[in-house]
Amino acid sequence: MTDFRRILLAATALLVSAGAALAEMPVLKAAVLKTGTVNWELDTITHFGLDSDNGFSLEVLPFAGNPATRVAFQGDEADVVVADWLWVARQRAEGKDYVFIPYSKSVGGLLVPDGSNAESLADLAGGKIGIAGGPTDKSWLILRAYAEQKHGIDLATETEQVFGAPPLIFKTALGGDFSGAINFWHFQAKMEAAGMRKLVDVSEAAKALGLNPETPLLGYVIKGDLLRSDPDLAAGFARASRAAKERLAGDDAAWDRLRDRMNAKSDAEFESLKAGFIAGIPGAGGIDEDSAARMLDLMARLGGRDLVGSVTELPAGLFYSGS
Image 1 (cartoon, one colour):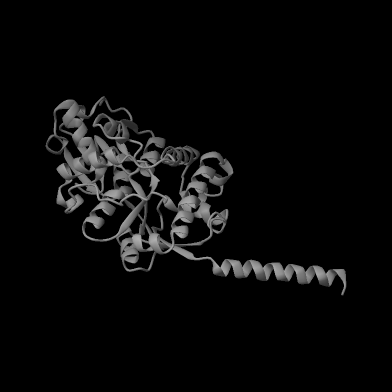
Image 2 (spheres, rainbow, N blue to C red; image 1 turned 180 degrees about the vertical axis):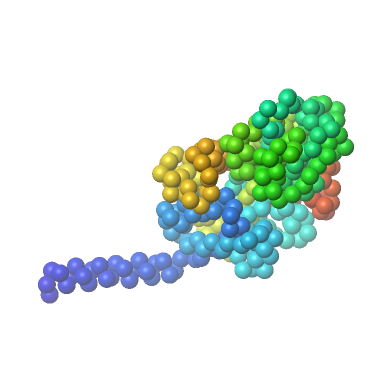
């Protein structure tokens, strides 16, 4: 047998072995909004092989809207979905065994147009506020509570609110039609890059209300059945998520390859989005459940059953412990 033939046979054997190992890896399906920022992290996981490094193969299922991702998850078409932990708490209270794995602590803020004279939320009285989402948007509720505590006013009665989809609030705010605007963090980053000024950060307001701004609101949701039947798969996904965050926190090249899907219209937008994502990376420790319970109480008081359903206290087993 020639040396070349031996090398060829050895290489073939290695490929067959690698293919067999890959075939044996469990597949984890993640249902996500196709334009969501979570795709930056999931793309990083698959591109750098962080899924296979942790014993699984990640399959991303893109959907046009968040409701569709939840339908896929609840219908067992997907193993993972992205949601805030208040939604997960509500589902657990209704008997669904869902578990929350932290993804991001990024929250929005209230921005005012360049040239606005507003120095506090009280200065917005009589004005119009654009709000991404609806009346139970968490950022809006926190800012309402903060305005009540600090200035003794109810923004819901002292201002006119315009609720809408994030892109609409973004476009209208840049047009100068609002006294202030509340938007999701990545639209906020673009608004700041375009010259709008942050009046109040939701994390600062939360801290003033006695909440811990380090408590991640957004996360991955998995089912308890998966956690029990394949704890290694759940742990592998959590490790891959953390590894992707660490790479994005320290590797500019990892961001350069994501730029096209970030839809950044300028260098300023790109840098603002990058900084916002990194700032939202949660700490590696566990979630502060006392702070989460205080937030739940606040959301229940202001948002009522429309937001928290029948939840009256923080459900046991809500947060993934890694064990």
